[in-house]
Amino acid sequence: MSNPSARRASLALALALALALALALTSCAADDPDSGPEATPTPIAKLESTELQVPRIEFCGLVPDGAVSDALGGKAEDEASWSNGEEVALPDDGPDVPEGEDVVHELGCAWTGASGATARAWVFARPVDPAFARAAIRSGRGDRPCRTGSLPAFGSPGATQTCRFPDGRERVRHAGLFGQTWLTCEVVDDASKANDLRSRTDEWCVEVANALNTAG
Image 1 (spheres, one colour):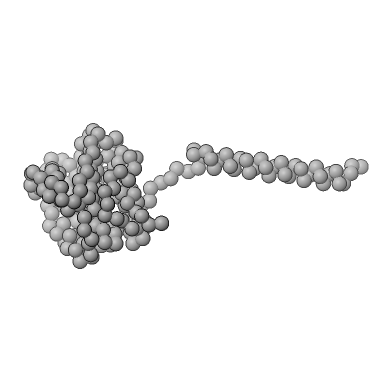
Image 2 (cartoon, rainbow, N blue to C red):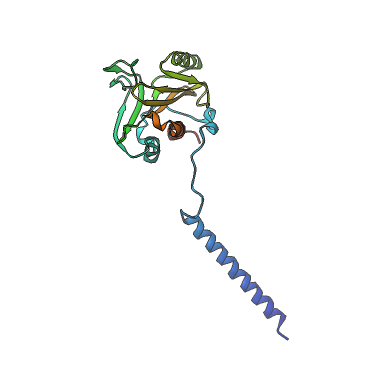
């Protein structure tokens, strides 16, 4: 018969080796970026608007390059930014928009892709209260040829506007109040891509809001 003490020692050693191997494998899996599920962006419907702290700052460099590419459907070929009080060329977004330049009271940026798609985002330069936000939303309801609604909730209050222009382009825009900051973001692309334009805009606006967020 074998020695019971020796058997217990052998069993303890085997358990220790098995535990060490399991820990090593777990560590390797944690260090491997391809070992876990790929992170997915926050759906806009689950964006915690009331918990975000959105400052009124120049933020173009904070927006991830991947978010820009996803919004445009490809890499950006042109980028522009503007600050409060600058004269900025107005975007060619339909017949109701006058040509030329205007002095803006915003901090914002725009990216354009090879296909002509454009992603923009900006914050109003001064603090905004809910009364101003509601007035801005009411004003937007008169824009033509656009439809304005309150869903999904982007900011509080907030609005979503969809415009289809005679030249065959479509624009989806979310705008809303985050604390005292009025944030607007939009994507413009060929109307033939309308099926995914809304989802691209939703993801784009979530990315912009999260890039600006200083909470946490």
